[in-house]
Image (tube, rainbow, N blue to C red; front, side, top):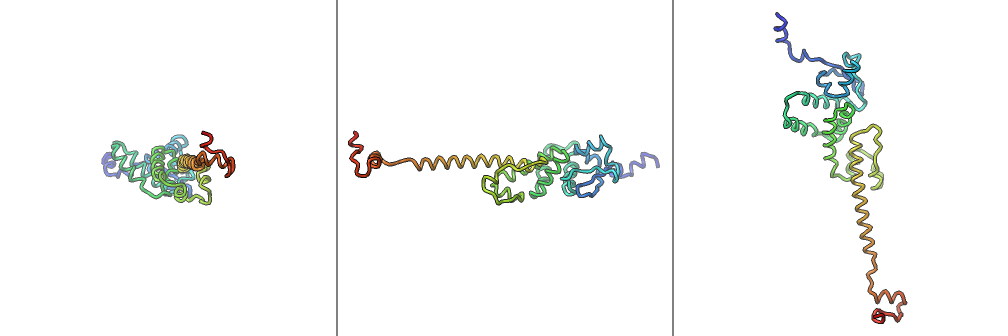
Length: 223
């Protein structure tokens, strides 16, 4: 059998190059190189450091990339790295892809950020923004399992974000918006109280008050 005949019967999968990736839990996976390289962080490790060529030399992924999140990231990459797909196809895929619960979406956003996969970061953060945009601070804190033993003002204080987590950035933008709304409500409330406290007594009543109930000065006398 000639070389060309041999290539004809070999399955395409057998011709693919593979690399090894190590997740945050220590598990190691073998994945298609062309798919994994769609992530800039992985691509850099391969090109600059020659990592991932074997199980013993696997690319160690960032802490926020667990096996479940990595699987989703790779599914996203497998679809989008294929050339020739129309914008309509990509949009439909993306809309269906982010239909998942809050926790999974948050973890996926963090994993995408760690792998520097900007299109997926934008997609997941946009989906999170739509989910939490119309919710109250209490509902948002419940979604993200944040402590709720705070005053309304304290609940809107910016959260610390040492690791530049995209979900925390979203929350802080939402909280900033809610703080403005709260301040405006308080301002309107103060104006209303001031208006209610205005002295609506007649001139005769005011003069009587100044002079005592038995005072002789009246509005008619002044006129």
